[in-house]
Image (cartoon, rainbow, N blue to C red; front, side, top):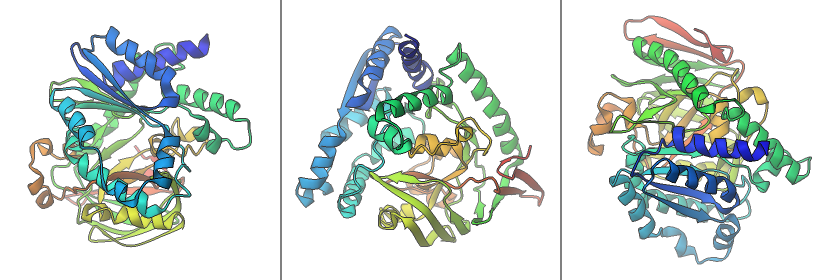
Length: 409
């Protein structure tokens, strides 16, 4: 009974705080079939809160794997136009999108990496218009995760998969504050706390951030009129929503051409059904000029080669090492969770909302403001207990932002 109640509370949180569904609004839920129990509660909650229509797009990893293994090569250069048209139609009509991210980190480990890379690029091209809505908060969207047996087994390989799923559920309920008496109020307070630090960073209007640890030595320039954001976002109608649940980050966009030095990953990155681990990237004038990885190097190179924009950064995010998700001491092999346990960067598209009036800028003007544009946006984790971050303002003031992996203010 406790689990079922928590599952309902989690679904309510996703609907009322995540996408914050409004009366007469359409909702599209994208989810693996294993997450059906959660999704059924979410659909019910959405209708109870006034949704006009709720569509569910089901996926199945075993079917996806069969396709990757046995379909003709040219299939992976295609993406169903009716899918992208549906997404854009819902976005234009003011609809909302809830994605359940619960993939098997090793699903495609035996698949030709080129097939994966081709399909990632094809889907990126097809969904670019829709992603222009999410990247500029012109529609409400949110991502949550629900345990599946393959994912839980990856995290806890030494226990029975059913026990692993139960253990992962406990962590998810804790990290999303579902285990609290009133999760919705807990999220209101959490968003307010994040906003306090966000305001401090915005007042400083830093020119550069300098990252230093035992493996990372990186300088990141920030564009004029950049904006730090956190927690809740706001749609064009002034309605709050939480794109990531959980979230512990405060983020902005780097200047596309002002990133120099070397950065080293501190957690595995799951991309395209494969794990990339222990990797480093070298930047010169914003562009990646060298990379290496102890695991998944070919997948990393394919990611970087997606298009010109995937050679550059699109996000810089601050997350203290001492935080609820990090304190679990668990590597989740799930970017939604791992990125909120660690400072991270992202290859690919920037969130245009992170620059003054950026949501209204035409794409052809992005480059002159230092805003990166790409078919992809992939976060990777770089935080560590020895990470130091120093910001320098336009008038030469230096401010310690992170000391030994945590906030210095």
